[in-house]
Length: 234
Image 1 (cartoon, rainbow, N blue to C red):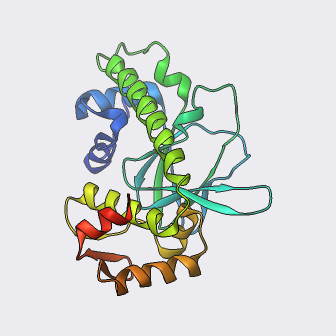
Image 2: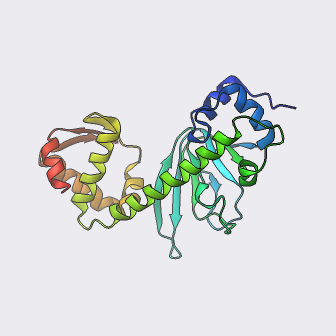
């Protein structure tokens, strides 16, 4: 029997790159084949834990979460943040490895869907016309993620803290298409993301502000001198 889903849930799924170009009607039929598992996760609770058995491709339906990598010494690095429609665990979905390579922490109350990878690439029992599109979307996501990881490696190779911050702020400016925006990461998460201490990050942000390049209040940023910021990022 086709899974009966609430309209808002279908809309949440259609915002995910995995289901681009798939209608709500086709998606409802397809989910009967995919047999997803949906769960609610409380704030500050781990959705997945690094090193534990892989449970399937994850899709954040609602809420905010952070992907965290922990070293053997206990050092935590925020790899990225997740919002509604974002995927996690896609890089190992078709890998011979069967353990989560990173942890995912719920920053708010979250609703999460898990899909078994084999259900995505196997022959559809309902002969869904959109299943081919699903596979194409999955391949596109993996290709995009590979390119992003390459960019991340280049980004982390930046030695100067001011340059790291400047490059990051410019990236946020380009994504938001405005000189005033809200950072997706909290201060401590941004410090982990840039691989610097929170104290050093706050100090350098203060210096950039004192130089008249930016102004900030909590996570809100306003760029006053875009040309100077670009120069700092060179």
